[in-house]
Length: 314
Image (cartoon, rainbow, N blue to C red):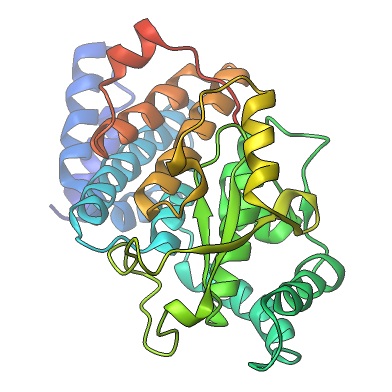
């Protein structure tokens, strides 16, 4: 693969024979992510709008194929970093997004909370400090006006707009809390994702690896209280959550009230995203997200298409 070869292939995209165009697309896609700089370099010399559009499709397909590889690599890791998982979700729409952008934004929120955080105060007081930094200083809030928008599932957009759905707000809040060594984890409550604040004295927080899904055991994941991030960080008891589950007429399950792993969280964001794309009538993107879910161990696309109707549960 070289510049002249890429140039020749792009030139052939203007061919009137659809079979030729199809073969050219497959050839370009086969080069993978390494071909993108060469394709970008040649795009400035293309005038024909049809060729430009076809090239854009090729670029999108290359980025998507590479994203599938990255998701598979993440899935195969024994310890699945949550930030990297949601970063990959954002790359579905923003393939050139730098992870450093997310890290910098999260660090800024953490810094404002860290200034007032002390070790000798109660867990509730620590949450109040974090709430002030998150809601009052950085102005995060629930995206009530556009609740079903796919933008709610991309962490970079939520970090910029400061508006999101329950699960993405919880993810950002949790990542900040864990940067402050606070034992805050997600709970997979049906229809409304929330967070749990664990008993601090059961965890060695100075040496705790928050990126690992394997560090929590039955002994050290005792919940002190729950945090409803979508509603200004309100503190709740397990009884109030059980009443919520009863109201939505779902059989109770003890796992609803315990910390869930990062893979579960990423899958739930992806399920929301496919529902959003379906709502926006973008079936191609909805099916692509379902393909990612299949890659992460969920049932194949045909199962979702034939047996389920994606809904917003956040």
